[in-house]
Image (tube, rainbow, N blue to C red; front, side, top):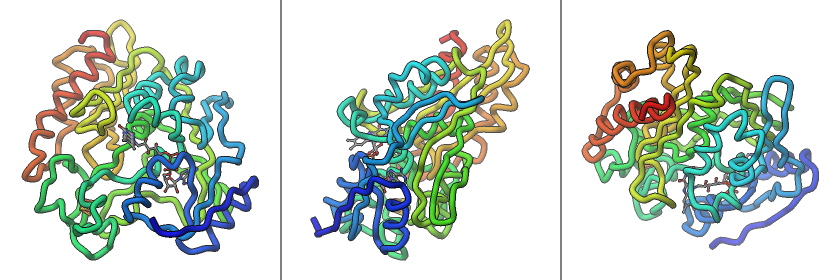
Length: 327
Ligand SMILES: Cc1cc2nc3c(=O)[nH]c(=O)nc-3n(C[C@H](O)[C@H](O)[C@H](O)COP(=O)(O)OP(=O)(O)OC[C@H]3O[C@@H](n4cnc5c(N)ncnc54)[C@H](O)[C@@H]3O)c2cc1C
Ligand code: SF4
């Protein structure tokens, strides 16, 4: 491991200033992703700004939303009474991630910022445009079993690994950030980016911006929700495909719906056309099959991930059936 400096400010302003002014300086929260990447030489910051002394851990009711601090632990959020009552889809997604030990360390801000699990990204002996821009994409012609079927580019076909972020995308959350230019809000659907020509950039955060909290608007999705994660082991494994499904039902008619997928793109993949197609329809398997077809339009597989073209729609149907209580 390379040598690095470490500071632990107690003021938000000092933390932001430290990351803004020193090149190659990063925030660190739970450390469950960043330390791994540093040990493997994938990321080599010269300075770490530990944010754990900042007061960003609270989960509280706002006027018409729920605010979750960036330092709230994944386990704390998943077990929180308000979250379980108002946003059970988020709790389900969090519980599907990692392991109990990791959820006890991992924070909300760190979870959103975790980097792809593409094997080529983690192996410094192999080419990877995300790790080393211009070196090529090993996965494009290589072993691409875990990779994207939507929104990829010829520079990168990686997927975003966070389960929590799939639920937050579906639930229309916004991210509150503070940086050298002040505070701003970023809709969750615009927080992560597609790879395009710059796969080394994962999000639309600017240099020095610190995630303060995530706000989730109150909505009708308190009962008929389901986060389905298909993976190779029951724990400690990332999604091959996941689906966050939320329905608002009245006499079995769908009044409103939210749908997003994980494991299929460089960012959590919101399915707005499919959501529109659900509204006004009966909550039946036939409806869900039609909608799954709409959701998969434009999907394209590589040599080793064609199974996702079938697993994707099947998972959407299964998640919607479970959310509707007809599974
Ligand atoms: C074995 C294993 C299995 C896993 N399985 C899953 C899984 O199935 N599903 C899943 O979703 N995740 C999984 N994870 C990932 C885990 O959820 C993340 O490592 C964790 O959420 C990262 O949070 P952290 O607080 O530890 O982040 P850190 O490692 O501290 O930081 C990660 C990144 O976020 C940045 N950062 C942190 N906080 C902020 C902030 N407030 N503002 C701006 N930037 C910030 C840091 O600079 C860093 O770049 C797994 C991890 C491991 C090791
Ligand atoms: S898919 Fe992206 S992360 Fe993986 S090797 Fe290609 S450029 Fe790197």
